Image (cartoon, rainbow, N blue to C red; front, side, top):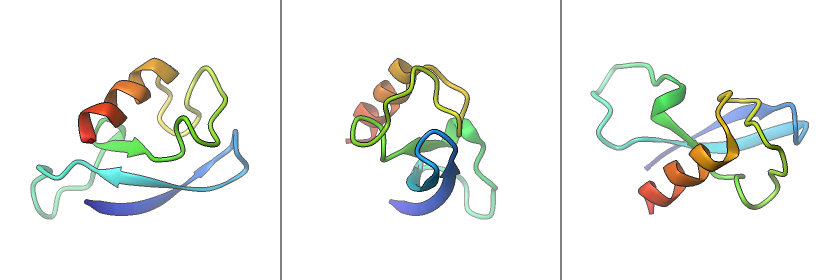
Length: 66
């Protein structure tokens, strides 16, 4: 998995995000192609400020990556 960093305004710090492994090489990922690894750890918001998705959707994405 490719790990990148994104600024999270809820945590006020850089958080690790992973890019979906089947993203075509050279294609820039969109919010739908990323999963925040801080979810469930230091994330306490109802809406992800990085990806503008509900917490439950980010939880599903994280479970799908495991």
